[in-house]
Length: 513
View 1 (tube, rainbow, N blue to C red):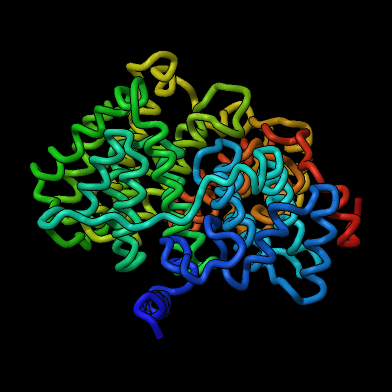
View 2 (cartoon, rainbow, N blue to C red):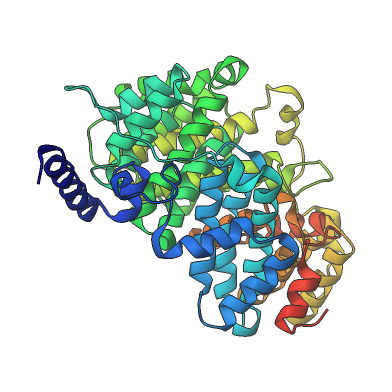
């Protein structure tokens, strides 16, 4: 064996040992498996899931649903496999750089949760909806020819400095290459550590898509596997760098400058999270005060509560009650899609879930930013948003007075009719009345779920339904039905915009037209 052959052999052995240590998908993502590359050195691949990922990207949309149904019925792919492949195809194609693309990604895990609550014969229906939408956009975008994410080699982290700080600096100077190299280096330790380090850059802004890119990518690791954490999370960097300049940076500079001051002032940098859980009255009063405060005052209030030992989850509960008011009070006739209230609720929910999976410092920061964001969106000093405090929340008094029935079954039938008639006031009043009867919530969720599947939802239906479901489950009895009232408004607003591809999907599954 000559010197060059021996060196190459040892290089391959070393690479193989490293691949075994970090996992094949992460190794490919970091460019560590290139010595074994065959026909496509510069493309991310996903092991056993790769054929299914390729199917999602390259099957003509007119043939896709039939191909997916066949895979499912033949036992070659379960619901989780299909969603995982859609998520990886989305990440490889868009890399967080396409608006419709990352919204398609946001809908994937909520759709899987919806599917689990359906009869087995219907479980594939919501999955087909989001796959059809995801792959349609992939092909419009350019598919394989336009893939954004490729293997990246890790950079060298400077000694004596936190990786999150280095990452944040690269984002602030719009250095995508540097940010990618830094995050690739951070990802060589553990997915949890990389997730926590990424949040230093995340906390520079409370913007809804920024927050949801991090959370939705993290939530998908449950099905795509931790070995794909780097692929999923690095999408956020592309969005951060693409947005972090000019008016965007200026608009969000308030939160960026305020957060470190509040963390220092209240001693939240290096302390464990508190365990105190206040009573219902505290949650109600805090939510009202937050809703009527300036963003700065709301953030100060949240930081003060955390410093007193109140748990971040309890602070988030008050913030969730406040953000729900943005859905209930908005006078805009269009209550679905990218509205102020929907964005606020989804962002608060995302920050709450991020905090639950993070180290204390990030949990504190997320709660403070959630308070700032909610007050910012409802801030009465900014344009027409000042009217939120004056607008009467749903359900409105006149609509409540028209609901006479005390029969839960009749109320459900009336709710179905109100949604189909696009009557937001009536739908909200019916759900409110149903909640007053202390009847089981499951039938209401079941009814609303059918509309989330059948209607397009303007990119936000599955995500918002997931937020409502989670917040209802976590909230105290005196607050939880407000969440479903908001979802009833959303459903009535979105009705009449049918889901593309659904007639074919139902035919393939043998369901009613």
